[in-house]
Image (cartoon, rainbow, N blue to C red; front, side, top):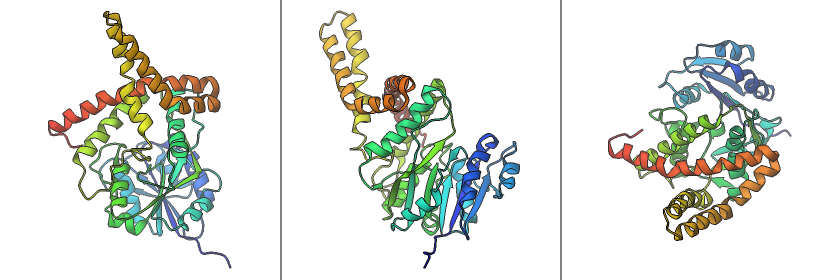
Length: 336
Protein backbone atom coordinates (compact mmCIF):
# COMPACT_ATOMS: atom_id res chain seq x y z
CA UNK A 1 0.00 0.00 0.00
CA UNK A 2 1.49 3.31 -1.09
CA UNK A 3 2.06 5.79 1.70
CA UNK A 4 0.05 9.00 1.40
CA UNK A 5 2.26 11.99 0.79
CA UNK A 6 1.94 15.23 2.68
CA UNK A 7 0.60 17.96 0.41
CA UNK A 8 3.07 20.76 -0.16
CA UNK A 9 2.70 24.28 -1.46
CA UNK A 10 5.96 25.56 -2.89
CA UNK A 11 6.18 29.35 -2.46
CA UNK A 12 8.71 31.24 -4.55
CA UNK A 13 8.90 34.98 -3.82
CA UNK A 14 10.31 36.97 -6.73
CA UNK A 15 11.29 40.54 -7.46
CA UNK A 16 12.71 40.99 -10.94
CA UNK A 17 14.07 37.45 -10.94
CA UNK A 18 13.40 36.68 -14.59
CA UNK A 19 17.01 35.72 -15.28
CA UNK A 20 16.99 32.81 -12.85
CA UNK A 21 13.31 31.95 -12.44
CA UNK A 22 13.12 29.39 -15.26
CA UNK A 23 16.02 27.38 -13.82
CA UNK A 24 14.34 27.44 -10.40
CA UNK A 25 10.77 26.57 -11.40
CA UNK A 26 11.57 23.75 -13.83
CA UNK A 27 12.93 21.20 -11.30
CA UNK A 28 10.28 22.20 -8.76
CA UNK A 29 7.34 21.68 -11.09
CA UNK A 30 8.61 18.36 -12.45
CA UNK A 31 8.45 16.61 -9.08
CA UNK A 32 5.21 17.92 -7.61
CA UNK A 33 2.78 15.21 -6.51
CA UNK A 34 -1.00 15.19 -6.64
CA UNK A 35 -2.33 17.83 -4.28
CA UNK A 36 0.90 19.84 -4.36
CA UNK A 37 0.96 23.32 -5.82
CA UNK A 38 3.52 25.83 -7.05
CA UNK A 39 2.88 29.47 -6.13
CA UNK A 40 5.02 32.38 -7.29
CA UNK A 41 4.51 35.59 -5.32
CA UNK A 42 5.38 38.61 -7.43
CA UNK A 43 6.79 41.34 -5.22
CA UNK A 44 6.31 44.34 -7.50
CA UNK A 45 8.45 43.09 -10.41
CA UNK A 46 8.78 45.08 -13.62
CA UNK A 47 10.50 42.39 -15.69
CA UNK A 48 9.17 39.13 -17.23
CA UNK A 49 8.92 37.27 -13.90
CA UNK A 50 5.14 36.89 -13.97
CA UNK A 51 5.15 35.72 -17.59
CA UNK A 52 7.89 33.14 -16.97
CA UNK A 53 6.14 31.82 -13.86
CA UNK A 54 2.90 31.37 -15.80
CA UNK A 55 4.69 29.51 -18.59
CA UNK A 56 5.98 26.98 -16.05
CA UNK A 57 2.53 26.29 -14.63
CA UNK A 58 2.84 28.30 -11.43
CA UNK A 59 -0.05 30.12 -9.83
CA UNK A 60 1.05 33.75 -9.77
CA UNK A 61 -0.22 36.11 -7.10
CA UNK A 62 0.84 39.62 -6.13
CA UNK A 63 2.40 40.31 -2.75
CA UNK A 64 -0.01 42.05 -0.43
CA UNK A 65 2.43 42.55 2.40
CA UNK A 66 5.25 44.97 3.00
CA UNK A 67 7.79 45.16 0.17
CA UNK A 68 10.48 42.51 0.55
CA UNK A 69 10.93 38.77 0.77
CA UNK A 70 9.30 38.38 4.20
CA UNK A 71 6.04 40.03 3.10
CA UNK A 72 5.98 38.03 -0.15
CA UNK A 73 6.50 34.73 1.66
CA UNK A 74 3.72 35.54 4.10
CA UNK A 75 1.38 36.29 1.20
CA UNK A 76 2.20 32.92 -0.37
CA UNK A 77 1.67 31.01 2.88
CA UNK A 78 -1.72 32.63 3.44
CA UNK A 79 -2.84 31.58 -0.04
CA UNK A 80 -1.41 28.05 0.25
CA UNK A 81 -3.63 24.97 0.32
CA UNK A 82 -0.90 22.47 1.25
CA UNK A 83 -0.35 20.99 4.69
CA UNK A 84 3.26 22.17 4.48
CA UNK A 85 4.76 25.26 2.88
CA UNK A 86 8.13 25.02 1.16
CA UNK A 87 9.84 28.37 0.67
CA UNK A 88 12.35 28.44 -2.19
CA UNK A 89 14.29 31.52 -3.27
CA UNK A 90 14.07 32.67 -6.88
CA UNK A 91 17.79 31.94 -7.38
CA UNK A 92 17.95 28.53 -5.64
CA UNK A 93 17.80 25.37 -7.79
CA UNK A 94 16.46 22.24 -6.09
CA UNK A 95 18.32 18.97 -6.80
CA UNK A 96 16.78 15.96 -8.59
CA UNK A 97 14.74 13.89 -6.16
CA UNK A 98 14.06 16.80 -3.84
CA UNK A 99 10.37 15.89 -3.38
CA UNK A 100 10.99 12.37 -2.12
CA UNK A 101 13.90 13.47 0.06
CA UNK A 102 11.76 16.18 1.62
CA UNK A 103 8.91 13.74 2.21
CA UNK A 104 11.25 11.37 4.03
CA UNK A 105 12.29 14.20 6.33
CA UNK A 106 8.68 15.30 6.90
CA UNK A 107 7.83 11.72 7.89
CA UNK A 108 10.57 11.98 10.52
CA UNK A 109 8.13 13.95 12.67
CA UNK A 110 9.69 17.43 12.79
CA UNK A 111 7.98 20.82 12.54
CA UNK A 112 10.23 22.12 9.78
CA UNK A 113 12.95 20.92 7.39
CA UNK A 114 16.05 22.81 6.25
CA UNK A 115 18.13 21.98 3.15
CA UNK A 116 21.76 22.96 2.58
CA UNK A 117 23.75 24.65 -0.17
CA UNK A 118 25.65 22.69 -2.77
CA UNK A 119 29.44 23.03 -2.33
CA UNK A 120 29.62 24.17 -5.96
CA UNK A 121 29.09 27.89 -6.55
CA UNK A 122 27.86 29.64 -9.68
CA UNK A 123 30.27 31.48 -11.97
CA UNK A 124 34.02 31.63 -11.51
CA UNK A 125 34.53 34.33 -8.89
CA UNK A 126 36.23 33.22 -5.68
CA UNK A 127 33.86 35.36 -3.61
CA UNK A 128 30.87 33.37 -4.88
CA UNK A 129 32.57 30.08 -4.09
CA UNK A 130 33.53 31.34 -0.63
CA UNK A 131 29.97 32.32 0.22
CA UNK A 132 28.44 29.04 -0.97
CA UNK A 133 31.12 26.77 0.43
CA UNK A 134 31.05 28.55 3.79
CA UNK A 135 27.36 27.68 4.13
CA UNK A 136 27.93 24.12 2.92
CA UNK A 137 30.84 23.62 5.32
CA UNK A 138 28.87 25.02 8.24
CA UNK A 139 25.82 22.82 7.49
CA UNK A 140 27.77 19.62 6.96
CA UNK A 141 30.90 19.93 9.13
CA UNK A 142 30.28 22.38 11.98
CA UNK A 143 26.71 21.40 12.78
CA UNK A 144 26.77 18.12 14.62
CA UNK A 145 23.16 17.83 15.77
CA UNK A 146 20.22 16.54 13.76
CA UNK A 147 18.08 19.50 14.77
CA UNK A 148 19.14 23.11 14.34
CA UNK A 149 18.15 26.46 15.88
CA UNK A 150 18.13 28.55 12.69
CA UNK A 151 16.81 28.39 9.16
CA UNK A 152 17.62 29.66 5.69
CA UNK A 153 14.70 30.46 3.45
CA UNK A 154 16.46 29.46 0.21
CA UNK A 155 14.88 26.01 0.79
CA UNK A 156 12.91 25.77 4.01
CA UNK A 157 9.75 23.73 4.63
CA UNK A 158 7.42 24.19 7.59
CA UNK A 159 3.98 23.04 8.71
CA UNK A 160 1.57 25.65 7.39
CA UNK A 161 -0.63 25.66 10.51
CA UNK A 162 2.38 26.31 12.74
CA UNK A 163 3.71 29.00 10.41
CA UNK A 164 0.40 30.85 10.56
CA UNK A 165 0.12 30.35 14.31
CA UNK A 166 3.48 32.10 14.70
CA UNK A 167 2.35 34.94 12.38
CA UNK A 168 4.95 34.09 9.76
CA UNK A 169 7.99 36.21 9.05
CA UNK A 170 8.34 39.64 10.58
CA UNK A 171 7.95 41.89 7.53
CA UNK A 172 9.23 44.89 9.49
CA UNK A 173 12.71 43.47 8.95
CA UNK A 174 14.03 45.12 5.77
CA UNK A 175 15.59 43.21 2.89
CA UNK A 176 16.64 39.59 3.16
CA UNK A 177 18.65 39.58 6.38
CA UNK A 178 17.50 38.07 9.67
CA UNK A 179 13.79 37.47 9.10
CA UNK A 180 14.58 33.75 8.92
CA UNK A 181 16.60 33.81 12.16
CA UNK A 182 13.77 35.65 13.91
CA UNK A 183 11.18 33.13 12.74
CA UNK A 184 13.37 30.16 13.66
CA UNK A 185 13.84 31.48 17.19
CA UNK A 186 10.08 31.91 17.63
CA UNK A 187 9.45 28.43 16.22
CA UNK A 188 11.95 26.76 18.54
CA UNK A 189 10.72 28.90 21.44
CA UNK A 190 7.22 27.54 20.82
CA UNK A 191 8.49 23.97 21.05
CA UNK A 192 8.95 23.32 17.34
CA UNK A 193 11.88 21.42 15.83
CA UNK A 194 13.84 22.20 12.66
CA UNK A 195 15.34 19.08 11.09
CA UNK A 196 18.48 19.40 9.00
CA UNK A 197 18.41 17.65 5.60
CA UNK A 198 22.03 17.74 4.35
CA UNK A 199 21.19 15.38 1.48
CA UNK A 200 19.09 18.11 -0.18
CA UNK A 201 21.85 20.21 -1.76
CA UNK A 202 20.49 23.37 -3.39
CA UNK A 203 22.50 25.07 -6.14
CA UNK A 204 22.62 28.83 -5.59
CA UNK A 205 22.64 30.94 -8.75
CA UNK A 206 23.55 34.24 -7.10
CA UNK A 207 27.04 35.49 -7.89
CA UNK A 208 29.15 37.92 -5.86
CA UNK A 209 32.13 40.13 -6.53
CA UNK A 210 34.43 40.70 -3.57
CA UNK A 211 32.99 44.17 -2.87
CA UNK A 212 29.40 42.89 -3.16
CA UNK A 213 30.14 40.10 -0.70
CA UNK A 214 31.72 42.46 1.82
CA UNK A 215 28.73 44.82 1.64
CA UNK A 216 26.39 41.85 2.11
CA UNK A 217 28.33 40.58 5.11
CA UNK A 218 28.49 44.05 6.69
CA UNK A 219 24.74 44.60 6.37
CA UNK A 220 23.99 41.09 7.58
CA UNK A 221 26.14 41.42 10.70
CA UNK A 222 24.63 44.78 11.65
CA UNK A 223 21.15 43.33 11.17
CA UNK A 224 22.03 40.39 13.42
CA UNK A 225 23.21 42.72 16.20
CA UNK A 226 20.07 44.86 15.95
CA UNK A 227 18.00 41.66 16.10
CA UNK A 228 19.79 40.39 19.20
CA UNK A 229 19.35 43.73 20.97
CA UNK A 230 15.61 43.98 20.28
CA UNK A 231 14.57 40.33 20.52
CA UNK A 232 11.75 39.36 22.89
CA UNK A 233 12.15 37.13 25.90
CA UNK A 234 9.72 34.58 24.48
CA UNK A 235 12.27 33.67 21.83
CA UNK A 236 14.47 30.63 22.27
CA UNK A 237 18.25 30.63 22.15
CA UNK A 238 19.41 33.51 19.89
CA UNK A 239 19.38 32.31 16.30
CA UNK A 240 21.90 34.23 14.22
CA UNK A 241 23.25 31.14 12.49
CA UNK A 242 22.20 27.61 11.62
CA UNK A 243 24.85 26.46 14.08
CA UNK A 244 24.80 26.90 17.84
CA UNK A 245 27.14 29.43 19.52
CA UNK A 246 29.42 26.56 20.53
CA UNK A 247 29.57 25.24 16.97
CA UNK A 248 30.42 28.74 15.76
CA UNK A 249 33.32 29.19 18.18
CA UNK A 250 35.89 29.05 15.33
CA UNK A 251 34.23 32.06 13.74
CA UNK A 252 33.85 33.97 17.00
CA UNK A 253 37.42 33.20 17.99
CA UNK A 254 38.68 34.14 14.53
CA UNK A 255 36.82 37.45 14.62
CA UNK A 256 38.74 38.43 17.75
CA UNK A 257 42.13 36.93 16.94
CA UNK A 258 42.36 38.28 13.40
CA UNK A 259 42.74 41.77 14.86
CA UNK A 260 45.79 40.69 16.87
CA UNK A 261 47.74 40.48 13.61
CA UNK A 262 47.50 44.14 12.46
CA UNK A 263 47.66 45.42 16.04
CA UNK A 264 50.78 43.38 16.73
CA UNK A 265 52.47 44.40 13.48
CA UNK A 266 51.65 48.06 14.11
CA UNK A 267 53.09 47.84 17.62
CA UNK A 268 56.23 46.15 16.30
CA UNK A 269 56.65 48.83 13.63
CA UNK A 270 56.41 51.41 16.41
CA UNK A 271 59.31 49.77 18.21
CA UNK A 272 57.49 47.46 20.61
CA UNK A 273 59.12 44.05 20.32
CA UNK A 274 56.18 42.30 21.96
CA UNK A 275 54.11 43.26 18.93
CA UNK A 276 55.62 40.52 16.80
CA UNK A 277 54.62 37.91 19.37
CA UNK A 278 51.10 39.30 19.56
CA UNK A 279 50.75 39.18 15.79
CA UNK A 280 52.20 35.67 15.65
CA UNK A 281 49.79 34.49 18.34
CA UNK A 282 46.86 35.90 16.41
CA UNK A 283 48.01 34.18 13.22
CA UNK A 284 48.56 30.81 14.93
CA UNK A 285 45.16 30.85 16.65
CA UNK A 286 43.43 31.90 13.44
CA UNK A 287 45.16 29.11 11.54
CA UNK A 288 44.27 26.54 14.19
CA UNK A 289 40.55 27.31 14.17
CA UNK A 290 40.16 27.75 10.40
CA UNK A 291 42.62 25.24 8.95
CA UNK A 292 39.85 22.70 8.40
CA UNK A 293 37.77 25.13 6.35
CA UNK A 294 40.79 26.32 4.34
CA UNK A 295 41.92 22.79 3.49
CA UNK A 296 38.39 21.74 2.55
CA UNK A 297 38.09 24.80 0.27
CA UNK A 298 41.31 23.94 -1.54
CA UNK A 299 40.33 20.28 -1.93
CA UNK A 300 36.97 21.30 -3.36
CA UNK A 301 38.05 24.03 -5.79
CA UNK A 302 41.84 24.09 -6.09
CA UNK A 303 43.22 27.56 -6.79
CA UNK A 304 39.77 29.10 -6.63
CA UNK A 305 39.36 27.54 -3.20
CA UNK A 306 42.75 28.86 -2.10
CA UNK A 307 41.84 32.40 -3.12
CA UNK A 308 38.48 31.98 -1.42
CA UNK A 309 40.26 30.96 1.78
CA UNK A 310 42.02 34.32 1.86
CA UNK A 311 38.61 36.04 1.90
CA UNK A 312 38.22 34.63 5.40
CA UNK A 313 40.54 37.39 6.69
CA UNK A 314 38.60 40.51 5.58
CA UNK A 315 35.32 38.72 6.29
CA UNK A 316 36.35 38.09 9.89
CA UNK A 317 37.73 41.62 10.26
CA UNK A 318 34.30 43.02 9.37
CA UNK A 319 32.62 41.42 12.37
CA UNK A 320 33.94 43.61 15.21
CA UNK A 321 33.35 47.01 13.51
CA UNK A 322 29.94 45.83 12.23
CA UNK A 323 28.98 44.82 15.77
CA UNK A 324 30.07 48.23 17.09
CA UNK A 325 28.10 49.93 14.30
CA UNK A 326 25.00 47.89 15.15
CA UNK A 327 25.26 48.76 18.85
CA UNK A 328 25.58 52.46 18.03
CA UNK A 329 22.54 52.25 15.76
CA UNK A 330 20.56 50.59 18.54
CA UNK A 331 21.60 53.19 21.12
CA UNK A 332 20.51 55.98 18.78
CA UNK A 333 17.03 54.47 18.44
CA UNK A 334 17.34 52.21 15.38
CA UNK A 335 15.52 48.90 15.86
CA UNK A 336 15.59 47.40 12.34
